[in-house]
Length: 295
Figure 1: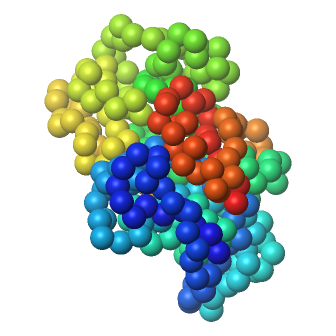
Figure 2: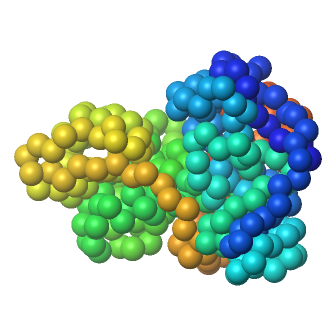
């Protein structure tokens, strides 16, 4: 099978598509024939050596949508099931940017029924990050939340999820994104000049201490770079989300797609052979929605 790997850290040209032996699923694992796999900023970080792993082939890709192709003993799935999954890991040997991928059975969920595989592939990493970040914030109905980076992939999911729970969401993004962010459910919108007073801030824009200043005394702040959140001040509880694979939670999110609560955005699609071009496009910036690889 073909798989995208990094052998030498560098720019988009460092990504190679190579032949690899078809992986076999062990106990409580499933093999998925990949129909689509999203490209995320974390893949650029892996390619650039930000997370280490030198000296071996490193597989790329966390998101996958496709069809169960083979199952190991004790798997919860059947051959032919249409599924989505998060394949967690920064320096794994094989990622989802491949023709086939093997993942833990507990990381898999039934794919949304109302969208195609290309759109479904944009769900796992970013939606799980958003919902797990909201779990850390522990907001209740009627409380206020500022989402910094509200037009981005994680931020957009967070706006929709929080608004659906009755949280009063303010979206922080560029002026050109106001209509879109409000369409996701944000009650208010801002581009800058935020005053202190929010019950919580979800900082998907990685603003750090600047965003922390917008939280009221005793509120909560969550960032999206594991371990890189600012320290507590004024009694503000601070943390950062480190996404975990969770098939049961992913199934809930897929259900919200089918209910129309969550919107999936695809910017462009690329063949697996054009993966280097996809990396270059994402690196340019200005992408609204996810770039998706189709083997």
